[in-house]
Amino acid sequence: MNPNTQQTSAPIRVMIVDDHPTMLWGLEKLISGEQPRMEVIGTASNAEEAFTHIRNVVPDVVLLDLDLDGQNGLDMLPGLLVNPATRVLILTGERQQSVLDQAVQKGARGILHKNASANQVLKAIEKTYEGEMWLDRSTLGRVFSEFRVSRGAEKSDPDAELRASLTSRERKIIQVIVEGQGASNNDLAERLFISPHTLRNHLTSIYSKLNLGNRLELYVYAVKHQL
Image 1: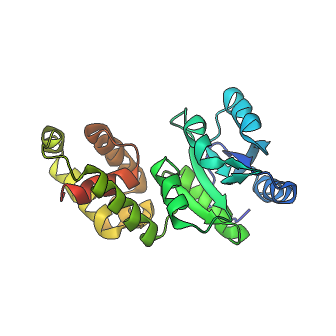
Image 2: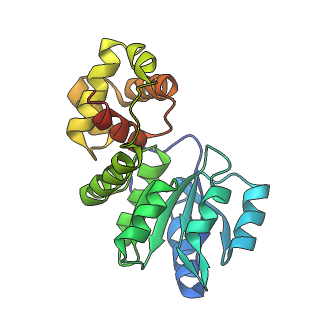
């Protein structure tokens, strides 16, 4: 465990879903080695095992492979996200961008390739748990483009009243998020001269007012409506 890493009051509860025994074993050893900051609360090699765990425990982060011995991990995402407290981080060897974009559109908070370093895996788990996204800018841009095309036919603006409820401070926060794109919450808070805790409180209020669930949705919404 890195002594400079701030410890949370409770460990980050991680579930690993991967059909490769060696990968599953290695990830479990890696994450368990971070106790008490993180703990593995379940492992699964297929959808059936994963859903059994989900019914019994609520992981904070699910580390999910997209190819599970012929089963498509994309199809599992709705079932893994039944509890809003759970976030999914994709760890995959898949290189087809359209598949990875679909994973994000279906609710995944981040994408990691299996050649990622141990430190990258641990950092991605931590950032995903904190509500941030682990996505490169090209993925973010493609997902936004898909969103814009799918909504392009809409002529009315039923959300005008929702946007009107935003305070000037909340609008400033949204502006900084758009300008910062993939910046961390700590970086954004520093730019706004507020604490990360205060920023999270503002984001919770913004999400509630706009009926959004996370920073990716807020980014897409803000660009679409030129906030």
